[in-house]
Length: 466
Ligand SMILES: Nc1ncnc2c1ncn2[C@@H]1O[C@H](COP(=O)(O)OP(=O)(O)OP(=O)(O)O)[C@@H](O)[C@H]1O
Image: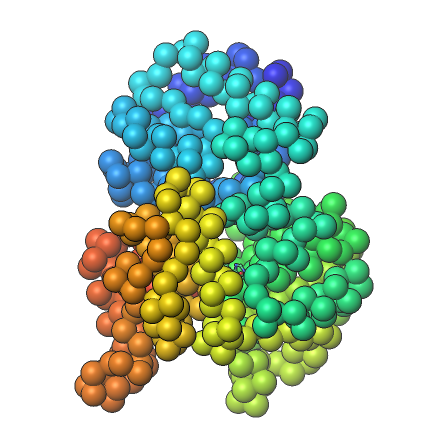
């Protein structure tokens, strides 16, 4: 236990300090973090034996919704993560729900010291046992291999051998073939497709099937980086390079050294950012901001975007030389509306996954629902289908999902004449405004309803000045 490493995430600094003081006496090293937004970065860069996560962040004090979203995110990044939840409200029902969603245990605040230490000890040693015997079922009833095979919601970083199975859909077989051929090479790959079509999954699958699979997979949403953060995030900085640079920091390129760097939303880079990126890719070395020492980097580059880069090149907002550098192999993921034959397969896959996760008796979907699904245009693609099925599985009264259990967003085909004459931007703005009202500004819920990633939602909020 003395060499184990823990991460505590809570927005109350007093709680963090008190918990660290207690746990330091029993466990090796304890990282504390006030801001859950830092979780992806921390998890991509560190190996934790257990993570203690608060369920009730400030913005959403009692429902635990934000805690659930962060739990999901952690398990997406690391399906084997041992997450123990902190809850201040003694809401055991919520804690039990969280355990069904993949947490290993929970601690009620205010805690009893002995009990708290024992719970964490249990989480850490369960993780060690699972490492020793990889096939052994875990606490929530699924072994690691079963999770990877079945894709029980935690398959974002699956075992290399089985990662291809989690990309569901017959229409994807040509893409899976290409992935098999391309993955073992070091060729740069550009993945194109609308939001929610599976670009991130494809990037992870390529890495998992590459010779770099034991090295880091580092993912950066470059579209979300401001001009001032771009260089220090990607290339790192040295202490004193700018006001906030209190310590040396390794950039994402260096973090990915030996492994794969995934640059998402590459289509949104400004001309200056494109020029900086191109130089680094040409020279295969990075210079941290404030330093003059160039460091070699060995990365396999995968990029993704939902914009038409050819069009951007034609209108001169994306450099052709950069496009040629990143698109050695190009993969285009079809939107869901163009692969309606896969709808049943995908829907059944998600029904199975969520019925298990939430212990619901749902076993399938009716022909009427399938017909409605086929006539809908799925603007949020597989992500939207996934969330709609999740909601329906939780709420449906019967064992077979019916049209009444499903909420389809108003599609362009059925929109009112007024809506049809509106510009797409206006519709988008209205949808976002409505969802923001419904969810009282909770970004996670709004993004989920709209089938967007949080970053994609942030960009739209910025675009519409909301
Ligand atoms: N073929 C598929 N099989 C199973 N799940 C899928 C498939 N495609 C997408 N998904 C699921 O849909 C969700 C969105 O996928 P992903 O994040 O890979 O899309 P994306 O194209 O990267 O989206 P964005 O452009 O918004 O970042 C994920 O939860 C993923 O698990």
